[in-house]
Length: 388
Image 1 (cartoon, rainbow, N blue to C red):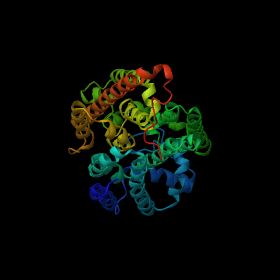
Image 2: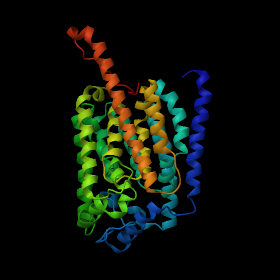
Image 3: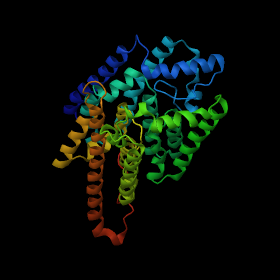
């Protein structure tokens, strides 16, 4: 990094950190809506041994996994105010920490652009929602950033285990369990799946009536009426258009899954070569495919930022990136079907941008490899963004 670039970098990061502090202090005197529906069932679980689940999940119910109930169990022993304040401080530290982890991995070009992106993201809707409500996504987000750091450093078992822990707390980005496998480290994915699976198994054993998670929480997450009002994934587009029958949502989900499977197979070499390309692919897929997706889940885009910021070059890509950023990150008032449709559309645009970039870099790799095909191409796809 040159001396001339340092002031701009420091300015952008200062704005970002101040925004984190602003959002954290704004919620200091209140209990976040998402946090309370986690704390209150855990409080009953800790003090009276009651199940945190209800027979019929509704908006405001505990719908987290049994493993999350076990891992977050200590919060139940604290008062609501104390637990909320401690969690607010933790989240306020975890998000910028995850930023710096991802920033550390990025190459020089991505770092320069991330300085500006950090300032933009700091005042965006997803961060405001995640911090204001104090949900568990920032914790999973920070753990996944740490897992990517470990994978990029060659620690596939450690990276996989940390990602598995993140998914056990909040399976929003469960597709990231496949990240080690996508970059050629089967052992990492085995560890990720094992950690998430064992923690959930422990949860089903230790949490009373944990079967209600399967019979009550999961159906609500998949088809609950309240969930469609919060759906900003691709599958929420039929809901926003008034086509709220399960058939339309399922059809949209199948289309989205087929799209990502196709580009994953077509560009598997490009994904294997770059940990951030693989992460971007899985993060965008995780934002588009599921039938239930809050708008605050956009915080996970930070994990994909180095890939997009270092690869966006052509005019069409710049336009698409700008449109996706506006649609996803900019808040436009209360949650409505129009806002839902806007954010869902932004995620579809982002998927299109991912496809454009993967196609371009794959073509470039093929063109570069053609003259030396006889001498081998083992170094054709150097892993980008590794810790040096």
